[in-house]
Length: 172
Image (cartoon, rainbow, N blue to C red):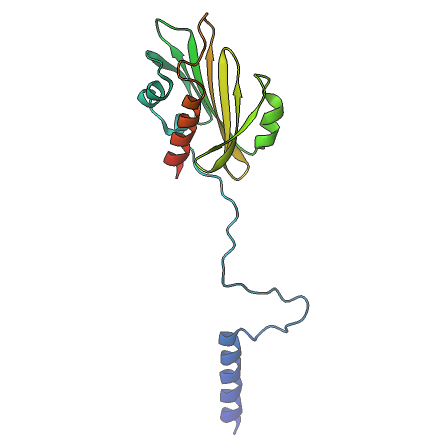
């Protein structure tokens, strides 16, 4: 008799565990969901925005750019001979894109969309800057400046939108 009662108890516990009925069901019970909750994840941005010197020249129309600084968060290129241009890439981690809106004094900010990501574009006579959300609380930033008598952007500010789109596409 004892074996039958023990066997029935084990079988009942097994059925309850498989059915998910092992909880008291009281107010402290945590409801289970079959749909996983995935928080907004930041994407992994490659060094220098994952773009090559040739990509930058193609997007901006600037030739002779030489990389002068590179680290995981910031890279810069200066024009060699024949121009007073600089291109800078920055990856801001844990910083709000809206915070950046108040930090740039280049000109009136314009809201843009780049590859489905919200962004902000600034344009001045000698510079352009674009900041684009890259996931989580991160954003990328591309800047093109000129110090000579010519405007800094031979192809307009859309060149920075292309660089930002390339960076986001390569990040996955």
